[in-house]
Amino acid sequence: GENVEQHPSTLSVQEGDSAVIKCTYSDSASNYFPWYKQELGKGPQLIIDIRSNVGEKKDQRIAVTLNKTAKHFSLHITETQPEDSAVYFCAANPNTGNQFYFGTGTSLTVIP
Amino acid sequence: EPEVTQTPSHQVTQMGQEVILRCVPISNHLYFYWYRQILGQKVEFLVSFYNNEISEKSEIFDDQFSVERPDGSNFTLKIRSTKLEDSAMYFCASNQQGGDSPLHFGNGTRLTVT
Image (cartoon, each protein chain N blue to C red):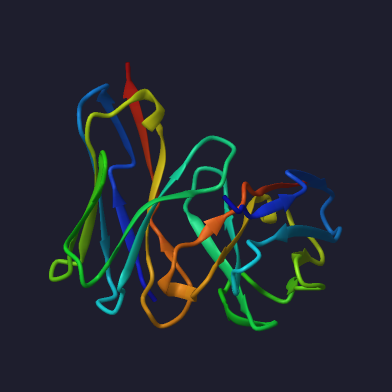
């Protein structure tokens, strides 16, 4: 099945700086890649997603890029704020079923 | 905005006991899921459910687990005889079009098996 790897596992940035989280996937058939933010005690919340027919997608301070050839996709957060502090998970769906495969998560801390 | 709701938020049970975790998916969604997250680890797929039957399940979802949609709104996960290693956060999720559409998660049930 699909294997999703995520780096780094922890990331600390100063408020106002950018943060980048990277994921790789193994199954070239994967075609849908969501990113989730998980705050303490809550379920993962979708923040942005990208499909395989698109190379980049942006929503205000958040952007996602996808390189199908290299099988990796990245989350970019610009002008970080303390409320961006959370655990971020990438995921992939290999288009052979409904199951999503998640990365191991990145704990982002934005230092005021 | 519609939400996936889960009850209870925390369940403590003794090893060997049966537990039922409850979920109300978003009303116009057709696909329902259970995922679990052991403390500090990744979110792991357990099972997906569509058209009143299991569509996929993982190796974790063995004979001790079952799911049911007893009525038009609830979706339940039953663990027949809990083990210590079943302690985890269990998340219910739903979406409209299966693997091609965003998953919406509930806030989870923290299951503690003692």
